[in-house]
Image (cartoon, rainbow, N blue to C red; front, side, top):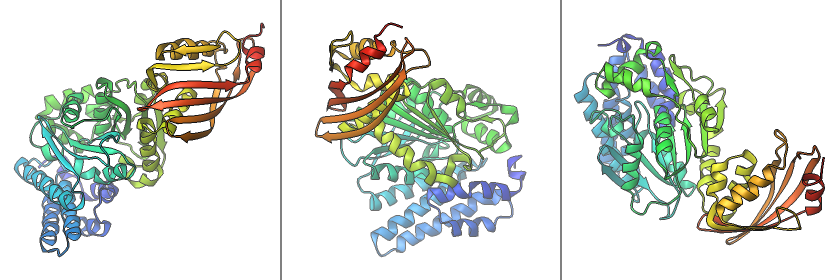
Length: 465
């Protein structure tokens, strides 16, 4: 059939076990079904047959909840019937369509608030716990689809975040209806345009090849304000890739020439938004470079989970809750979280987040009788002149270390305390406690009144060497 299908079934079964379980497939059922496979060509029909058994259970169920759960299981088994580079595209298309149909039936019973969106080159499932909730776009990878990441979508909804899980051309429901789109920002743009009254706080999570696609979307789409990639490649060496990858590429792009060109375009586009890049230490795929280069080029946060495999599905508890919280903080309009995000951005030197934290007409009032004293008006003056001017008072390499120590909020008013320690240009040690009274409206800081030891500022930052 192909080089991949000539390989023994055991390694592929083992490699996909944690992935299937994390998606929601029962581990005992997975072991029972895959244990009966003598070869990889048997995989698609075995998984599709199991999916039909779950669909039959749904039809016989007495309660809507039981029917919804059975349809959910059917959707997953049909989906995993499509994860191999099956040259029988007709069968592949039937299984993908059956998975999408079962997912719709499941959501109608388990999550009736879900909206199904579709447009040129995409389909999606949208869930919104509230109309103004920050929105996360879930981007699947090489052989995954939106159905596989419903547990992640549910975890986002439980944190008060809206989620739009999509399939683009050649993915999931659209696996045989179009070739992969390397300019993936076009897919995300069309999907966001289909959302009625989208919020101004939008993030993206990309998984596996979706990590690369999500970074492309973040690079080009200004509405995206934060991004996460999980096991996303930043370079592919075609001649080193295993048959499973190359044959999937050929099928999903329409031919080897197109596959090689797609692989050539995989890289690490600079992402200006807050970025978290996650990799597994055990995720070693020949010919695939991990996400460290993306984090380096973008100034993002790089998280390596040493015991994690591909997609980190075997270690989900170590990173997923923290990462979703990371997104929630960066996209939240809650005044306390907006101020927390701002102070942490100052500590990290994240200029984009610092700038985005302020309203255009914000003011900052600084006490005392110093060159910095007075009321600074407008975001550009605050960031460029006031904060930038203060930063130039420190030695290169001696920039202050900022640590947030307390936040108290009452409506739109937030009081934050932080410490600032560094080395002034004159060599003196700067160590000061600061307090700011912030006003936050519509997710942006509109005014700040700062209180600090201005005598210490004068003695250390403005005294002659």
